[in-house]
Length: 305
Image (cartoon, rainbow, N blue to C red):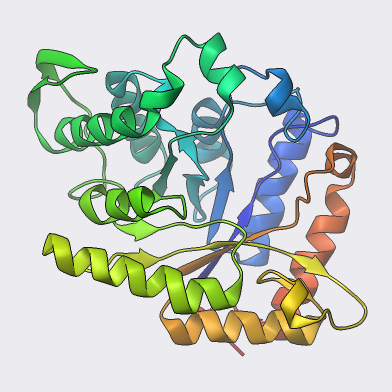
């Protein structure tokens, strides 16, 4: 099981130097994946949790491809309706080329209604737009010259070079807990990427429902690649009150071991707790990740100790 970390690419503490240090820490320590979140218009509903300055993830990951050599780079998650699929396909294929095939395409439909309004994207159609755009992007990534006719996007005879390094395309991780998100994962994705999960729900509801939908669609079961909220405490947290990744070091270790037993391909660690001032203290997050890795993970062999 590979372990990734969620890069803090927003907030009062972010800067080009902090972003570069995040990448250097993550790669040098042996983590397998570095992921960045996405917003374009920092409207009031966004800024309370993810305030400016906000470094847009596609351009950021293109830059980080040049200052790293081995760590995978991804989005957690790119809000698909915000960009034309031609732009998405081109920019992300370029990241995959520039990184030598290290890009992971995490996607979601978005949630910030004011941001949708600012970008003139119909909020209530975001799920349907995402499905169509993902279909178009996969076409652009797998054909030398592509054409597509849909409700929300159409194009004819588009030259797609350079296509991604990875074949048939970079892994597509689909976020979201709803039935629609699970069906989107099965139809268009390679992995399910839920965020801030409770173990009983993930184990007893989410995974069985994903398998049920995969069976209905006659498609293979996607990989499991959750992002977990990491909050290290001095004493144990009652299991009824906590999400996966919250609690004592022993509880977090047990969570990771259970996720590995479930067959998760990746787990992304995320210490951000929706408190913008925390972005000024990256060293605190790095210490937490270091302790978890040193005490409970064998990153070289991609396993929990």
